[in-house]
Image 1 (tube, rainbow, N blue to C red):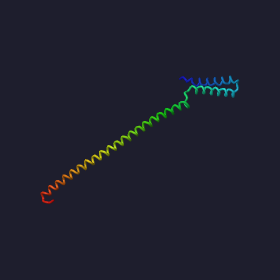
Image 2: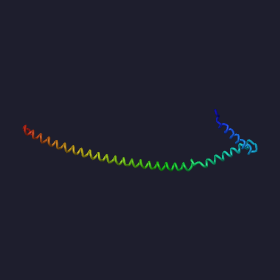
Image 3: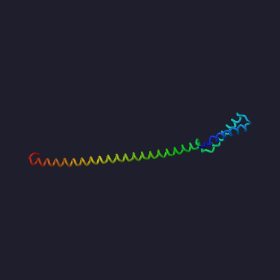
Image 4: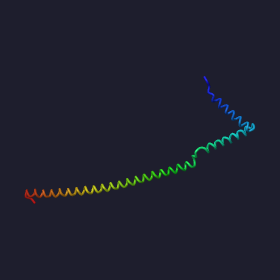
Length: 131
């Protein structure tokens, strides 16, 4: 069986890095540590500078787009509510007109029936002799 050579490579890289910083600092462990921290900050700043901005510009753009979308949605909702209200009032007025027309027709029919009943009553009464 073969063993993985990754641990050996990682160990050699770490030893080489430690040796480099100790050699460049003149053998002083504190100076080597300070130089390593400085290099780490430099690399982090370089990486951070190359990444797209997440905080300032993109947040502003996102908020602006969100506000635009929100205002469009609000406008659409208001338009729909206005249309629904208009349709509702038209339906109510149509229902009132239909109710009034129906009641008028019922009254006319009722009057005709009552007139017909009165004529029949007078006709039948004349047969039986009462007036």
